[in-house]
Image (cartoon, rainbow, N blue to C red; front, side, top):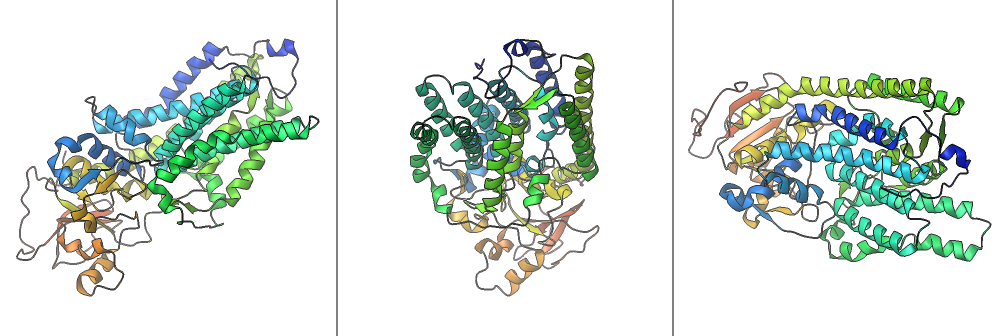
Length: 544
């Protein structure tokens, strides 16, 4: 258990030792119960409609089975490097090798991620306030956020680590300095391998806390305070040699600023599928906070103001793309949000307040669960159809992914379809053009002889019209894998209209027509459109 640090704000000793409604054991029970409750959609949907998640899961499948799967071994190779994006690559394949289905291994990872974030918020709150408090439990509805729907799993896992690391720094702040710096250095190294953005969240927390201390000790000698403040950043130097050794450093020039979307990034903390649900959650939570503050049962640690200022400035200054990673700025607010919740101190000595707390929290969690489960259930039909279409693909095939329109895929309900073709890698050991194999960002690479058959830059798939041009009138600068698309075995066209016509009958034969996607067999020279592909277990989409 973390030892409480000396509270920054003054509080009478009698009050600090008075019961605040729930004991540490009772809060632990609430933590376990609400973690199980909020995880219900994860357990009931083996393949949730998250954008990047299925792509990551396909990579986990390759990492876990490459040494005994000759079909995958023909296309892919593993190159272990110092890359700040390895959390899933280490954990999920290890779980899968224990005999667990890859989908279940992914579910275990996500539930662990939820538990890590919430326990980290509770631990940070304990270190700041000096007692266990229930305030961080209001973070449960925020676990389902837009960043989660995009599928940024390594970053979200890293938020949990960052919260625990911040709790350790605060708890050891008044202890002998070597312990604090050793722990922080270890946490910095772990966060580096989680994600650079997660390391940045920890940096925001440390900077905010140390600036607060610098201000509150302003009457002490300036030189000593300044040296102590600067030394707080020394543990972060541990990543310097790692970054120098990392191929990710080669992506440092890929930077792009965009001020539009900053408001969207704030909305991503609370908004998922329904704006109405987001509005209701904000209204209920806001009203509860106002009532609690007015009745003096809710106070905030001064770190809250420091976090808002420091986090706000950094958020506005961050680029949209950094190290070739999109949403660099827009993913920051959710990490700051959990730290802000950890700054709250809710007193629940009065029965009315305890009952009100439980009612509000249950209403918020129930509202979020209903929203997520309803939408995932609606989208599960499309997922089932897609998984059925994958059965039509011959094992070990090469699968090209294209869009009917390159402007599609941004709607939140389309996220689950963006990387759905990677299911073919999981279930048919196929090479898929969109599987993440970007040098410097992933340890999974395409073998040299197939580098011209994959998107190694994580770009937007081409439209069908662009593929037709690439086949008939190739233009200079056309990506190599676009030019080779007719050498693939299958083509997935995503975001199609109902009963969309065959866009290229001389080269494509329809195999499956599902909800907003089509699967085509690519006709090779010497074949005809009437030729039937040969593969075992052929059945119609929709059959189970």
